[in-house]
Image 1 (cartoon, rainbow, N blue to C red):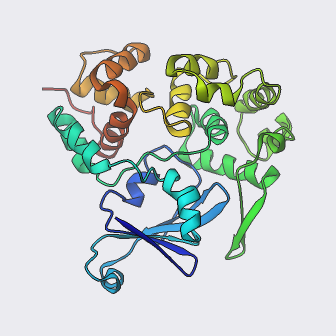
Image 2 (cartoon, rainbow, N blue to C red):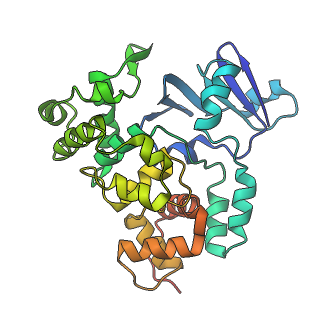
Length: 307
């Protein structure tokens, strides 16, 4: 793999394990919009358009067959300081998938289907707020609510086609939100109270993000569950996507379906499903979950009986 920068765009050359659809449309991130053949995203202080170059465009890069462009991504310094970590570029996803595919046929099929999926390394505070909003909610509404919160108190970072884009707010900025504005404008519903109380707890250091980052997984999970609106599943999402805890195993209805389809018999308890996932996939449980979740949701796994 090689990375170059030209005219404020970043090109990732010869990286087959990078498919934007499989990265953004798997439930781990909410600040994206599908536009033409790519994705407008807001990440950190950046607004960018991420896509794979088509066959005619790739020809200009010589013998390379796979080229991803991060339009408006900046310079090589921007890649090194942000995008490299954000897209988890130091992990060998080919090697990861190969190790998973050797475990069993179900995981093999999921990993073959999910080529190019990467687990993003996102901001911990953003994940806390985002996944509190996500509980019992639909993707379009989640995305809309987060965007409105960013418009309300975030810093404007870019304008394009008459639209302004905003960075995710700091804790200090979030503390200016009220239940009323979260309900009436951001339309988060009953979650408004959870958000206001959680933001206050974080601001008052009742739950410390620095402490969460240092704690072992189980203790970090318990710490996050002190926050209003954060249950076991939401805490695991926060830890997997916001703190790179590979062992975190979020359990939702799709996870229950594929676990019952492939690995357990008639188990509906989220706690027992999580325990089974940890036993089977060990310290990479969250990564295996992402391939299986993506495959199960896209292929409606769990509709027919396991044979």
